[in-house]
Length: 364
Image (cartoon, rainbow, N blue to C red; front, top):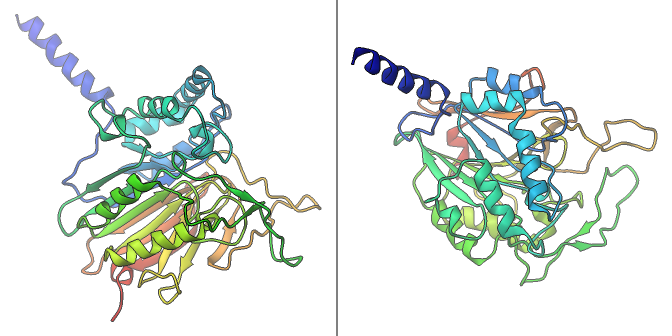
């Protein structure tokens, strides 16, 4: 009997040791990491640096794999390549992972509502990230998701948007500016009032989420929100929808918002001033982290990698090598301190915006 009890106890301890960590709602969250754009068929050494931060959470912001297929067996196989990465397995044992998607893991480059396998792709996405069978994402269209972490007074709300499932087709024909303005893409603003980024159901859901009490809100978008000039995939491709998002943040009284984004294969911090015509009443930061293992492909004609991409909202420099992001919150201060960071492959901070939580509230 004692031998049986020993092996039962041993089995329970072993299960606890190998079980992935789960999100706790009560403990304060002060170390959150994030990133985007991971080629599943290439080495991913950056995960060691992410783990060294001792994150309580990792947010995957899209292009988590480069699936680009309407064959669901191909998509599953590519997710498996990510799952087999030693560093990614180590991350899974370190902290919970919460994800949204962008175009390549959705299924096709720059795709939106027209992608024909989106329902099937959604279930494969949810399977890979271990989303439970009773989760609302299993029963509705789109992978958007929200939850609040931490105790009252130290609450962090995660809002992960789905900018693919419902997004209207893009419009091409972007006109280049003067030489020297910076690197530009091909998409022109689509000002059709019927065009959408999120779809009616997700817009309604988002308005409800922004009214939930929280001190810090991390709104995660696969593509950038604040930059609206460079003509690649951005919320600015749909200027009425971008304005609607910013207006919704303002009108719901949602304080403490920080935007996290990926996609660009570069890292930068952008700032929408509080007094901007579309402003939310306080400075709105958009922290872009990309790529986890695929450095920027923006080259000049001379082959120089550090090609400027136009962004008049940029704070500081652009970082072009592999990177990940971190949000550090020091709750010990009467006015909590946030550090919005971009870190390199070794974990060193290469970009940072330091601010107090009170700065993310409208001033009289």
